[in-house]
Image 1: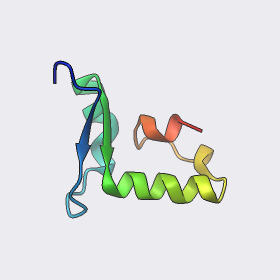
Image 2: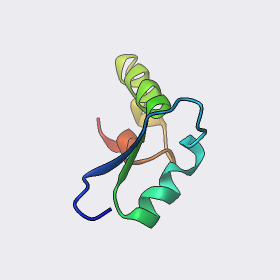
Image 3: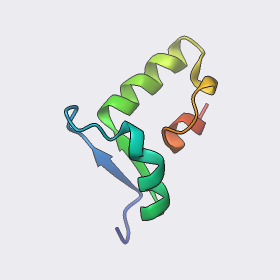
Length: 62
């Protein structure tokens, strides 16, 4: 992953949400998925994003 800013998993059928934290640690980069981004966006809109832990660095962005 040299030179990459992030890894994006676009398939919604891949259940990566539960392993995103581990992937980020192992790859030393941000990992994003379609489902994760949808959940994050929804939670931001209802102002509940700060209530999520363990599903990647995206949820640390307010």
